[in-house]
Image 1: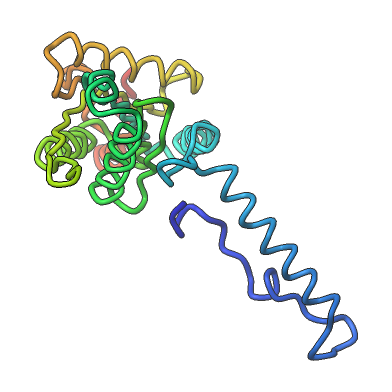
Image 2: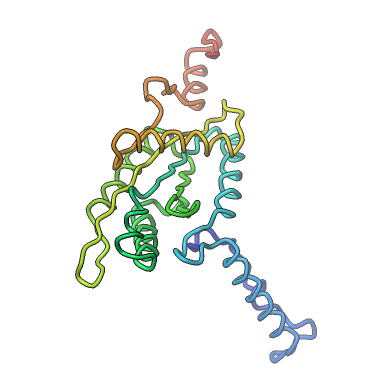
Length: 235
């Protein structure tokens, strides 16, 4: 997990103050060690043990939080689902150990490519998800394209042999007007991922931009204040 994804703790949360004011307090030291162990255990629960990025459990929690944030702030949340193309062939031809290295390699590329506020996760198997907070569809498409290009252009070096990979990606965006669940949002992104697979792989599929309302809530409010109450809200 990255530092940005961890809770910020006050100094005394890890180094508790001795209740009787002693500088060398065995109880305070033991409490500090227990809290450190608890913090590490919490990270392990949220982290995929193979790749080191967030796991499915954390993905669901984070996506729920971002949906709630969108409902409060009106800022959209985008979701990218991606899958390694022909990953079964990688395992069959190179072996499962190299397949694991390929998953680690992809996770590293994701962390290098996305922004600090974005949340890359291993969804399961060779499928990954990236949550993009405060990001409309128009801004999430270039992120997905950067990921696709990075994977295509940076192969995994296996003892001097280059293992080239590509990924297919699907994008969807949650807005405050929607009333759908986390599962429904993931299903939408998965449908665009499958469309990318059917379109020849190594590509990005997403909703038609023409169907996306380009005027945000904030822009509507600003226009309403500028021109007066004569401007009606669009259904």
